[in-house]
Image (cartoon, rainbow, N blue to C red; front, top):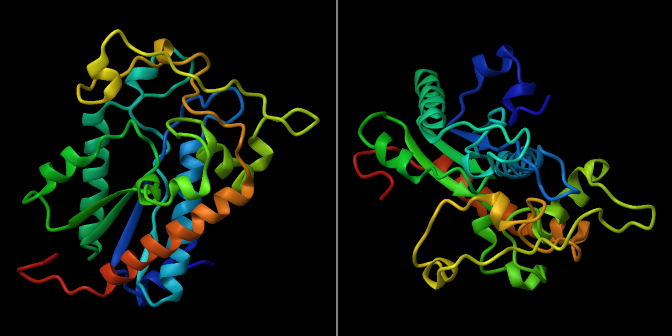
Length: 259
Protein backbone atom coordinates (compact mmCIF):
# COMPACT_ATOMS: atom_id res chain seq x y z
CA UNK A 1 0.00 0.00 0.00
CA UNK A 2 1.19 3.48 -0.87
CA UNK A 3 -0.68 5.72 1.57
CA UNK A 4 -0.27 8.80 -0.62
CA UNK A 5 -2.58 7.14 -3.22
CA UNK A 6 -6.19 6.94 -2.05
CA UNK A 7 -7.16 4.11 -4.43
CA UNK A 8 -4.57 1.85 -2.77
CA UNK A 9 -5.28 2.93 0.80
CA UNK A 10 -7.64 1.20 3.23
CA UNK A 11 -9.99 2.41 5.94
CA UNK A 12 -7.72 1.07 8.68
CA UNK A 13 -5.16 3.66 7.58
CA UNK A 14 -7.49 6.60 6.99
CA UNK A 15 -9.13 6.10 10.42
CA UNK A 16 -5.81 6.71 12.12
CA UNK A 17 -4.11 9.12 9.73
CA UNK A 18 -5.46 12.52 8.77
CA UNK A 19 -4.68 14.09 5.40
CA UNK A 20 -4.16 17.83 5.06
CA UNK A 21 -4.04 18.12 1.26
CA UNK A 22 -5.90 16.31 -1.52
CA UNK A 23 -4.60 16.33 -5.09
CA UNK A 24 -7.23 15.78 -7.79
CA UNK A 25 -5.71 14.98 -11.22
CA UNK A 26 -7.72 15.85 -14.31
CA UNK A 27 -7.13 14.17 -17.64
CA UNK A 28 -9.06 13.67 -20.87
CA UNK A 29 -10.00 11.06 -23.46
CA UNK A 30 -9.06 12.29 -26.93
CA UNK A 31 -6.84 11.43 -29.92
CA UNK A 32 -3.19 12.48 -29.79
CA UNK A 33 -1.79 12.48 -33.34
CA UNK A 34 -1.43 8.95 -34.76
CA UNK A 35 0.99 7.55 -32.19
CA UNK A 36 -0.18 8.38 -28.66
CA UNK A 37 -3.12 6.75 -26.87
CA UNK A 38 -6.46 8.41 -26.20
CA UNK A 39 -5.68 8.29 -22.49
CA UNK A 40 -2.45 10.31 -22.77
CA UNK A 41 -3.64 13.22 -20.63
CA UNK A 42 -5.03 10.84 -18.02
CA UNK A 43 -1.85 8.75 -17.89
CA UNK A 44 0.22 11.92 -17.59
CA UNK A 45 -1.94 13.32 -14.78
CA UNK A 46 -1.71 10.03 -12.88
CA UNK A 47 2.05 9.69 -13.42
CA UNK A 48 2.85 13.26 -12.44
CA UNK A 49 0.52 13.04 -9.45
CA UNK A 50 2.14 9.87 -8.14
CA UNK A 51 5.63 11.34 -8.41
CA UNK A 52 4.64 14.58 -6.69
CA UNK A 53 2.67 13.03 -3.86
CA UNK A 54 5.28 10.37 -3.16
CA UNK A 55 8.02 12.99 -2.93
CA UNK A 56 5.88 15.24 -0.73
CA UNK A 57 4.85 12.33 1.52
CA UNK A 58 8.45 11.38 2.16
CA UNK A 59 9.16 14.99 3.10
CA UNK A 60 6.44 14.94 5.73
CA UNK A 61 3.42 16.24 3.85
CA UNK A 62 0.06 14.71 4.74
CA UNK A 63 -1.07 14.51 1.14
CA UNK A 64 -3.29 12.11 -0.78
CA UNK A 65 -3.68 11.60 -4.52
CA UNK A 66 -7.29 11.06 -5.61
CA UNK A 67 -8.31 8.94 -8.61
CA UNK A 68 -7.89 10.81 -11.88
CA UNK A 69 -10.93 12.19 -13.71
CA UNK A 70 -10.48 10.70 -17.22
CA UNK A 71 -12.85 13.04 -19.09
CA UNK A 72 -12.43 16.68 -20.03
CA UNK A 73 -13.83 19.40 -22.28
CA UNK A 74 -13.55 18.34 -25.93
CA UNK A 75 -15.96 20.66 -27.73
CA UNK A 76 -13.26 21.70 -30.22
CA UNK A 77 -12.57 18.03 -31.11
CA UNK A 78 -16.15 17.05 -31.83
CA UNK A 79 -15.28 16.08 -35.42
CA UNK A 80 -12.94 13.31 -34.25
CA UNK A 81 -14.27 9.90 -33.17
CA UNK A 82 -14.39 9.11 -29.46
CA UNK A 83 -13.16 12.45 -28.21
CA UNK A 84 -15.36 12.13 -25.12
CA UNK A 85 -16.64 15.54 -24.09
CA UNK A 86 -17.72 16.82 -20.70
CA UNK A 87 -18.98 20.40 -20.93
CA UNK A 88 -17.30 22.91 -18.59
CA UNK A 89 -20.42 23.36 -16.47
CA UNK A 90 -20.72 19.59 -16.00
CA UNK A 91 -17.04 19.24 -15.12
CA UNK A 92 -17.32 22.12 -12.65
CA UNK A 93 -20.25 20.38 -10.95
CA UNK A 94 -18.36 17.10 -10.61
CA UNK A 95 -15.31 18.83 -9.15
CA UNK A 96 -17.47 20.88 -6.78
CA UNK A 97 -19.22 17.75 -5.50
CA UNK A 98 -15.87 16.03 -4.93
CA UNK A 99 -14.52 19.05 -3.06
CA UNK A 100 -17.55 18.98 -0.76
CA UNK A 101 -16.85 15.31 -0.07
CA UNK A 102 -13.32 16.28 0.91
CA UNK A 103 -14.58 19.05 3.20
CA UNK A 104 -16.91 16.55 4.87
CA UNK A 105 -13.82 14.41 5.49
CA UNK A 106 -11.96 17.31 7.07
CA UNK A 107 -9.74 18.18 4.09
CA UNK A 108 -9.85 21.86 3.20
CA UNK A 109 -6.73 22.20 1.03
CA UNK A 110 -7.19 20.96 -2.54
CA UNK A 111 -4.90 21.07 -5.55
CA UNK A 112 -6.43 20.54 -8.99
CA UNK A 113 -3.62 18.96 -11.02
CA UNK A 114 -4.71 19.54 -14.61
CA UNK A 115 -3.22 17.70 -17.59
CA UNK A 116 -5.62 18.82 -20.35
CA UNK A 117 -5.38 22.20 -22.07
CA UNK A 118 -9.10 22.16 -22.85
CA UNK A 119 -9.98 22.25 -19.15
CA UNK A 120 -10.30 25.95 -18.37
CA UNK A 121 -10.64 25.77 -14.60
CA UNK A 122 -9.84 29.30 -13.42
CA UNK A 123 -13.53 30.35 -13.60
CA UNK A 124 -14.35 27.46 -11.24
CA UNK A 125 -11.91 28.79 -8.66
CA UNK A 126 -13.70 32.13 -8.81
CA UNK A 127 -17.09 30.43 -8.37
CA UNK A 128 -15.86 28.46 -5.37
CA UNK A 129 -14.62 31.51 -3.47
CA UNK A 130 -17.09 31.95 -0.64
CA UNK A 131 -19.13 28.94 -1.76
CA UNK A 132 -17.01 26.37 0.08
CA UNK A 133 -14.74 26.29 3.11
CA UNK A 134 -12.10 24.55 0.99
CA UNK A 135 -9.11 26.44 -0.35
CA UNK A 136 -8.68 25.34 -3.95
CA UNK A 137 -5.47 25.73 -5.94
CA UNK A 138 -4.96 25.01 -9.64
CA UNK A 139 -1.79 23.69 -11.28
CA UNK A 140 -1.59 23.03 -15.01
CA UNK A 141 1.54 20.95 -14.44
CA UNK A 142 3.02 21.66 -17.88
CA UNK A 143 3.08 25.38 -17.02
CA UNK A 144 5.54 24.62 -14.22
CA UNK A 145 8.10 23.86 -16.95
CA UNK A 146 7.76 27.16 -18.82
CA UNK A 147 11.13 28.66 -17.91
CA UNK A 148 12.94 25.29 -18.24
CA UNK A 149 11.20 24.03 -21.37
CA UNK A 150 13.74 25.23 -23.92
CA UNK A 151 16.59 23.73 -21.91
CA UNK A 152 15.05 20.26 -22.25
CA UNK A 153 13.01 20.24 -25.46
CA UNK A 154 13.65 21.35 -29.04
CA UNK A 155 10.13 21.94 -30.40
CA UNK A 156 7.11 23.94 -29.30
CA UNK A 157 4.50 21.87 -27.51
CA UNK A 158 0.74 22.22 -27.86
CA UNK A 159 -0.79 18.76 -28.21
CA UNK A 160 0.89 15.37 -28.83
CA UNK A 161 4.23 17.04 -29.48
CA UNK A 162 7.69 16.53 -28.04
CA UNK A 163 6.79 16.86 -24.36
CA UNK A 164 3.80 14.53 -24.39
CA UNK A 165 5.56 12.00 -26.61
CA UNK A 166 8.55 12.03 -24.27
CA UNK A 167 6.18 11.38 -21.35
CA UNK A 168 4.74 8.45 -23.25
CA UNK A 169 8.15 7.00 -24.07
CA UNK A 170 9.19 7.23 -20.43
CA UNK A 171 6.05 6.21 -18.56
CA UNK A 172 3.76 4.24 -20.91
CA UNK A 173 6.05 3.19 -23.79
CA UNK A 174 4.01 0.10 -24.64
CA UNK A 175 1.21 2.42 -25.80
CA UNK A 176 3.32 4.62 -28.12
CA UNK A 177 2.98 3.49 -31.75
CA UNK A 178 6.40 2.96 -33.34
CA UNK A 179 7.81 1.27 -36.41
CA UNK A 180 10.31 -1.57 -36.22
CA UNK A 181 13.17 0.91 -36.52
CA UNK A 182 11.88 2.84 -33.50
CA UNK A 183 10.53 5.83 -35.43
CA UNK A 184 7.16 7.20 -34.45
CA UNK A 185 4.02 6.48 -36.46
CA UNK A 186 3.14 10.17 -36.45
CA UNK A 187 3.02 13.20 -38.71
CA UNK A 188 4.97 16.40 -38.04
CA UNK A 189 2.24 18.01 -35.97
CA UNK A 190 1.99 21.01 -38.27
CA UNK A 191 -0.89 23.45 -37.84
CA UNK A 192 -2.69 25.80 -40.19
CA UNK A 193 -2.86 29.54 -39.60
CA UNK A 194 -6.22 31.27 -39.42
CA UNK A 195 -7.16 34.16 -41.71
CA UNK A 196 -6.54 36.63 -38.89
CA UNK A 197 -3.20 37.93 -37.70
CA UNK A 198 -4.70 38.88 -34.33
CA UNK A 199 -5.73 35.28 -33.69
CA UNK A 200 -2.41 33.81 -34.84
CA UNK A 201 -0.48 36.21 -32.61
CA UNK A 202 -2.66 35.29 -29.66
CA UNK A 203 -4.14 38.61 -28.63
CA UNK A 204 -7.55 37.61 -29.94
CA UNK A 205 -8.57 34.10 -28.89
CA UNK A 206 -11.06 31.55 -30.14
CA UNK A 207 -12.01 27.97 -29.34
CA UNK A 208 -9.94 26.37 -32.08
CA UNK A 209 -11.75 23.82 -34.29
CA UNK A 210 -9.14 21.08 -34.11
CA UNK A 211 -10.13 19.34 -37.37
CA UNK A 212 -9.33 22.57 -39.26
CA UNK A 213 -6.22 23.40 -37.23
CA UNK A 214 -4.46 20.02 -37.56
CA UNK A 215 -4.04 17.07 -39.91
CA UNK A 216 -4.23 14.15 -37.47
CA UNK A 217 -4.96 16.02 -34.20
CA UNK A 218 -1.26 16.63 -33.48
CA UNK A 219 -0.09 20.17 -32.78
CA UNK A 220 3.66 20.15 -32.18
CA UNK A 221 6.47 18.10 -33.68
CA UNK A 222 6.95 14.85 -31.68
CA UNK A 223 9.95 13.37 -33.48
CA UNK A 224 12.72 14.66 -31.20
CA UNK A 225 11.05 13.12 -28.14
CA UNK A 226 12.92 10.81 -25.77
CA UNK A 227 12.29 9.12 -22.44
CA UNK A 228 15.30 10.90 -20.96
CA UNK A 229 13.77 14.30 -21.71
CA UNK A 230 10.61 13.30 -19.83
CA UNK A 231 12.61 12.16 -16.84
CA UNK A 232 14.52 15.47 -16.79
CA UNK A 233 11.21 17.33 -16.93
CA UNK A 234 9.82 15.18 -14.13
CA UNK A 235 12.74 16.15 -11.91
CA UNK A 236 11.82 19.80 -12.35
CA UNK A 237 8.13 19.14 -11.75
CA UNK A 238 8.79 17.06 -8.66
CA UNK A 239 11.14 19.60 -7.15
CA UNK A 240 8.76 22.50 -7.72
CA UNK A 241 5.29 21.11 -7.16
CA UNK A 242 6.18 18.67 -4.38
CA UNK A 243 7.78 21.58 -2.53
CA UNK A 244 4.51 23.48 -2.86
CA UNK A 245 2.59 20.48 -1.48
CA UNK A 246 4.90 20.28 1.53
CA UNK A 247 4.41 23.98 2.21
CA UNK A 248 0.65 23.71 1.73
CA UNK A 249 0.39 20.75 4.08
CA UNK A 250 2.25 22.60 6.83
CA UNK A 251 0.40 25.90 6.43
CA UNK A 252 -2.15 26.85 9.05
CA UNK A 253 -5.58 27.91 7.79
CA UNK A 254 -6.43 31.17 9.51
CA UNK A 255 -8.30 34.37 8.63
CA UNK A 256 -5.48 35.52 6.35
CA UNK A 257 -4.76 32.24 4.56
CA UNK A 258 -3.09 31.96 2.06
CA UNK A 259 -1.42 35.29 2.85
